[in-house]
Length: 189
Image (cartoon, rainbow, N blue to C red; front, side):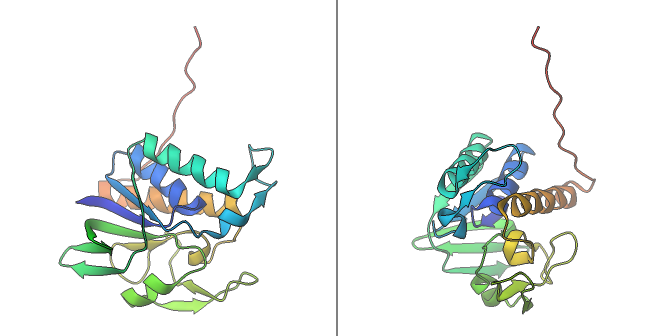
């Protein structure tokens, strides 16, 4: 049983996976490889001079995997509520998760299938978003959304930050106490 299954490994999903895995949460990261970031040339990402979108996605996935997140490449056929958890169906495989985080970029298809509230997008060229509160919660218990699909900007740095924010909120809810992830620079001596 996963603590969290993240749908989408773009900047929001991978950033969330990094925080969740580092916090010791059993994390599943699923992606079909069709992220809009795959086509991006990024010159406005803090801390990075410039980077191709596919490289940014690969670095994010590698960071998440190095911290313990499991990565699967597949299309999700369906997510079903099963008692107190969810069943994520992909081809011949099924995975159980306590929380779902939708970081699906431009697509609200899985959100619609789950019956979540969809609203008009406010960002240019973004038709629809999942309705979420300030923490990233949707109207369904233990289903969250982050990044562009949650109404945040399409800019990678903003969606990555939003993915981290929602992950911290999920960790805090699971732990029952506000989670802070802050490492201290170690002396080189």
